[in-house]
Length: 77
Image (cartoon, rainbow, N blue to C red; front, side):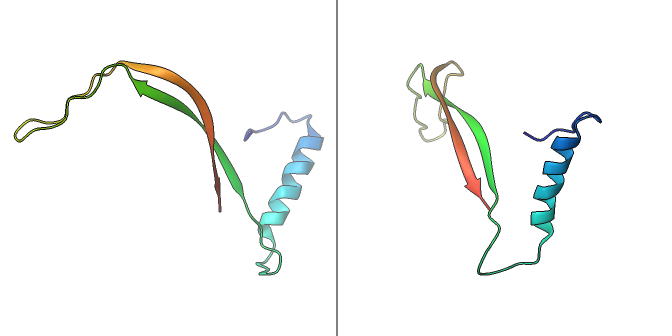
């Protein structure tokens, strides 16, 4: 979680500074720093089947959806 901690939370600030120190290290091909990011994502399903486009008519989709759960997307840099 990214947030600005309360002033009295010195332990949080110290741990955050430890992480920032790692990011400031010079690149080492034998020990690269890998950063992960996570994003929650909502899975949606169609309530009504979309009508495909035809010549001169765009695809038609209803804005009503069915919630199919959630997942998390992970990415690394």
